[in-house]
Image (cartoon, rainbow, N blue to C red):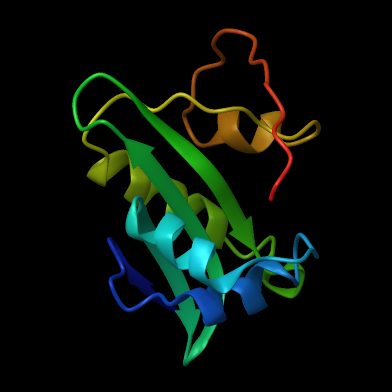
Length: 127
């Protein structure tokens, strides 16, 4: 497994193909490219195949968040998510605040994350 911190080679087409295996949807390539350019992208690749990705969005000082931590279903439970999270902790420019999907709390706690405040969302339709 090859891990890359701040993966500048990650392109929108590959990311969309990867994401559609975890969160199927209609994703715009241009907007995805713009989004990827604004985050620190930590990737896990099995050869040429993107199998895991963690993205950090940060102001560089006060705040950071993990926008998503995704691993292909067939690669889960192999330590890839834990390694991506470890690399995020080692390479974040600020304290990270993030929400967890229901049922994922034990994974984050096992990896040394401290449960914090409740999170809320303000939904916005994609357009």
